[in-house]
Image 1 (cartoon, rainbow, N blue to C red):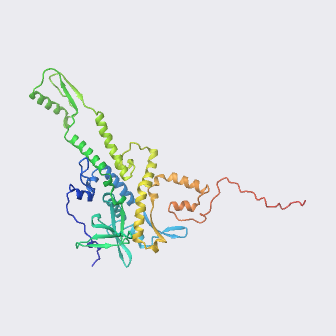
Image 2: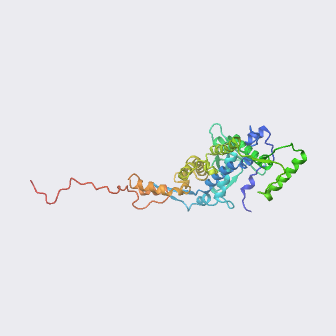
Image 3: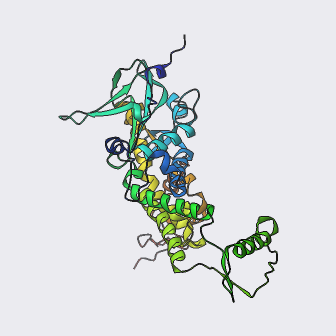
Length: 402
């Protein structure tokens, strides 16, 4: 019979009312000042939140993840180690590394925590299984600060695991970004709902018909309305309306209130981008983006948003997959160069100047690109055009004695 540790765990599927203040506080949902409930599912329905969660999760999942071994001052990928395939290819038989990391990152962005159970046989990691945030509770020892993870089992009980068997990624203070930004998300949702209702109910007319002369009765008004709609409905758009009295049409255009409404919707995108630390242009808000500064914005996405998540991932994986002895010779690292390949020209120009400076060797530059060293690459080269200094101590062969 095949060993399946998943049968130990369960995720409860009970339905709760987020209007309950206690449950709302527990799950990060509930009414906001705008009256909109904000939780993981409702937050994802806001396009800016959906885009922010996707761009972070998919970026973390798409970056190559490698196991390296240290050999003196050099490093190389330890592809022969079984752990390499576990983190780089498939953490378990039915999940790719991309899917596992993407779902775990979504968990932490929406729920504040992401958990992975490391199934070990004889002390060796054999597979990594995602745990639903709702099935795992973190207990901290008050004296040592050591965490213990209680995982709900299918039998109804809870089983504790040590920090060396659980991969744990958490948001700031364990609170999801959607909770910190719940008011901004709620306002964005309310604005979108208002705009949808306005358009769906045709609450705003396209223009006003003004009739000069006698006051029209109800029958005449209904006849004029029918004539106008017959000429301007979806099937006869652009038709000509004919009336038997002098009529003026005054189209209604956007006013200052409309413009403020649009500006407020754009501002909410920026507010959500701040909460997730994602540059606005990655949420399709291109108001301040240009071709020249987009590369810098992409770099800032890596430096100020992704790096923190990647460092936490690396530490969590090493803690659960490598023993203290193994961590002295091996480490896990993302290849962030895959995210900045668009700026390859700038990097190569910088390396060329550094190696020819000279303040960097060829092998030091290659290490920054995760490339192996080359023979003779540890020597600092003299800058081009540098003259070899003369040796004043060399005496001419034909020196004449005084």
